[in-house]
Image (cartoon, rainbow, N blue to C red):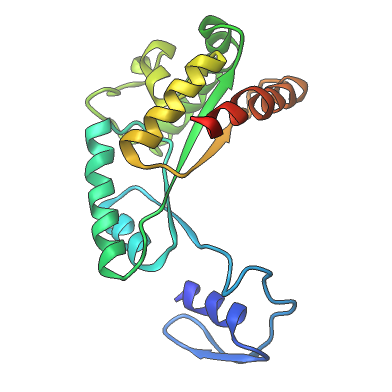
Length: 208
């Protein structure tokens, strides 16, 4: 229903009305209207079967979560999304969220960012926000070596290989990258990493 309200506000000239289960109003006027027509693409994040199907039915892009699903599990989720999107007459489009760090070596990336992301994972696991899996049954299972495959770490070559693999295997069109967690790295390091991604990785990725 929230999406219905948003679409009305974006697309109806002048005031719009809505009376649903959760929202009731007679005249709301959003101005200025979005530049994109009919409205900006709606990205929906989802990682459970029902929510993934809902993303396909109601959204324009499915934002895949940066968690610890295996490639086979991700492919199964993708099947759910594609089926729902096609049934709704939509073109399936995918964005992938990933944490990562670009460095001169894999070891440097692991030391600078990988170890911090491990602590982030432990925090979420400790508070029940990450459910146990066959791979991660306890906090002690979260090590840089084990979480590495769920991140993008290393050199320019490492990044290009991993990004292209996601594009090829899952059809990912957009990558949403995070290079910092509450524990760090420092803002100056993060800005340098982002700049290097834009200058050294993105141009080459576009040519692949």
